[in-house]
Image (tube, rainbow, N blue to C red; front, side):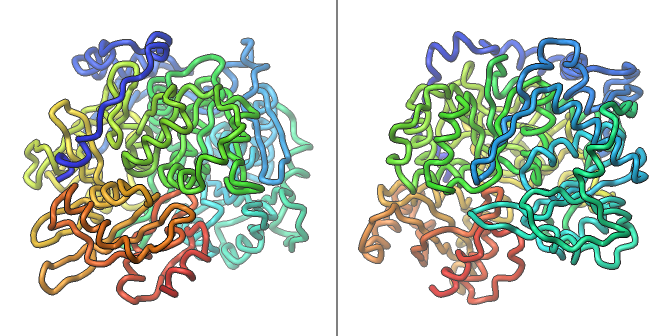
Amino acid sequence: MVSSFLVESQSVPASQKYVQESNIKNYALHEYAGKNRIAFWEACAEQLSWNKKWHTVLEWNSPFAKWFDGGKLNASVNCLDRFMNTPLKDKVALYFEGERGDQQSYTYEQLYLKVNKIANALKSIGVKKGDCVALYLPMIPEAIASMLACARIGAVHTVIFAGFSSESLRDRVLDANAKILITADGGIRKGKITELKKIADKAVEGLTCIEKVLVVDRSNQNVTMDSDRDVWFEDLVEKQEPYCKPEVMEAEDPLFILYTSGTTGKPKGIVHSTGGYLVGANTSTKIVFDVKPKDIFWCTADVGWITGHTYVVYGPLSNGMTQVVYEGSFDQPGKDRIWDIIDKYKVTTLYTAPTAIRLFMKWGEKYLEGKDLSSLRLLGSVGEPLNPEAWHWYHTQVGQKRCPIVDTWWQTETGSIILSTIPSIMDMKPGCVGKPLPGIEAEVFDDLGNPVSKGYVSILSPWPSMLRGIHGDNRRFIQTYWNKWGGRYYLAGDSAFKDENGDYWIEGRIDDTINVSAHRIGTMEVESALVEHEAVVEAAVIGIPDKVTGQAICAFVVLKDGVASAEMMKDSLKEIVADKIGKIAKPKAIFFVQELPKTRSGKIMRRLLKNIALGQKPGDTTTLENEAVIQGLFQK
């Protein structure tokens, strides 16, 4: 079905200027990596700074991999120290802007000094190599610096999104057996202050594993400080020496644990290594974003998610890039905030989520008026499928048909981008994520492990930034990712269509696939059809039980501002789906809503929509961006 709908989108070539100036001008790198995969990854690893070279590039005992075994390095050194004797030390590493307009900037040298002081502060309270440090911080420079400080002393960091509840925070701290928690008095978003310290206090109450809580003074709030446990971050850090000798780490030593949701309800602690992860982050950043010395890079993700780890911290900084970091909402103080920031800092590369793009589209082009976006040269998308309608809007209104789009697919588990368009060597196809990156072997399989045009996204061979396991649960690691085809291939959990040119079209999570009368229909197929209507800006569909067809399709639709007579549009929307996909995919029910429930990372929470459609309670909403959305939906 996706083959008859999504692929009809016309191919769009990158501009001749972009192609001429691109670092990659042909498929030579892909071809070399395809024939010499191990040698390719070894050459990528050699771009980093190592204390000791590896003796074995890859040791593979499925599903367990060791990359660059015997090699020794430090992630902090690769993001900072190696630039200190070069002109890059005076280059801006971070431009920070808060929602209220407060600003800071850090050169690589200034960030280096801050990281060293934080590293010494952690050592002064007993943190050693192998200890786990939990971070529960807003999107501020201290979050990035604290991650690098942990890496510097060999501590494993686990960053916990600062939108999680005390219960969710407690679960993750306990599972990781964290020794230290770094939090803030409060975080600032949508003009309000989230009382992070109060949430953290409730989370760690009675926990014997937490020895100290460091508190960043971010929002100037009066908070309760436990004299035996709590320490003001700034007071401890400022008295430290500005140099901390980096810990020499084995390539396979863990760098961080990052929790992602699981079907059992218990979060999975995804473990990533130091060497392999850093090679994947550094290489994918270079290839996908066509890194240039004067780039101003802005990945809008929070460091609480894998995108923030790889494309805010380790990827850009290991490439010596300048980037923008923003704490806050894109509608504060007005809906033109993102365009103001691009104009102000002359951003060259914007990497954001489809839900954000559709939100900007809903607000309208008027907010782009008068903004100078001419600095932009490349746009990116991450998080979930980018439907063709939003793709065209992004390309036309934001990129002014001048900037190509890299639509990327990857996961917390993969560590770095797996599939992406490379606009300098392949035409862009709205809604398509392109091909596997060099050194990645992927395929679409059926249930028996046979290559098919439509089926399960699979990765055939190990890659450096792959997860090394689920913290404390190897059995779950094997069952979740490696049992489908007897341990031979990695099961990504997404379904996709691969067209005749070998390009991938992601349909969504396997568990998002709706089975109507024995026909498997991907959520993205229907959603993309719905947004073809000129009045629709965004849609989400779910499957609900049906006595006749097994499952039926239920759609939640967001209309452009000012559209009236929504109820009269239901029939025309159903007919669009029937025309684009087939009558089997016509929604049984359509609800018009002002906004879809999303996480702060921009993912639609379809589970909540299903609960609404079935008249059930919403359940856990700790990751929800806006609680008011659910209240409005439950009044439908």
